[in-house]
Length: 143
Image (tube, rainbow, N blue to C red; front, top):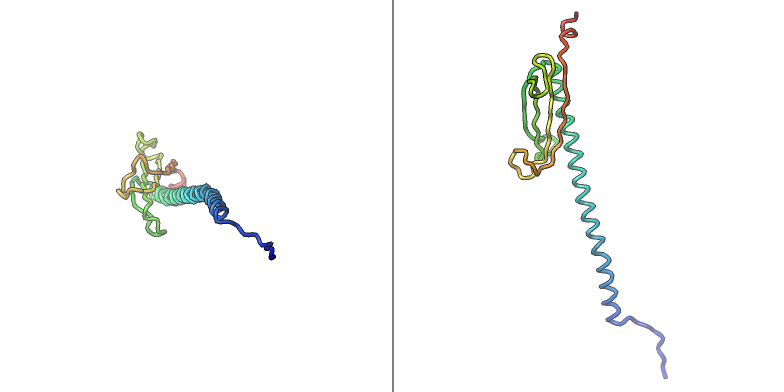
């Protein structure tokens, strides 16, 4: 008489183990998907902040050099962020918080143009920075 001491798994045990493993992987995959989406959102916010600060500095240099009002808008095509747009303005109007000829309000808004319509919609993420610049004629005249 031959006695076999080898043990093997039955098909039912393999199917149950596979099912349990599958059930354990599903929440992990959802978590990873959520983490990837959160990382993308954070990267977008960081890019918008960096571009807004860059545009604000550009507008401040224009204001400091000439103290002229104006506005501009566009996209960030050079760094490859064509989905992000900006609006920048320099104003001395009292309604904007300025003083004609003496105090200029510089404001920059950067947004992620998700629908591609070149307009800032209420549902689109945006970052706005604003500051004021004084015209110091005393320093300009040298007196």
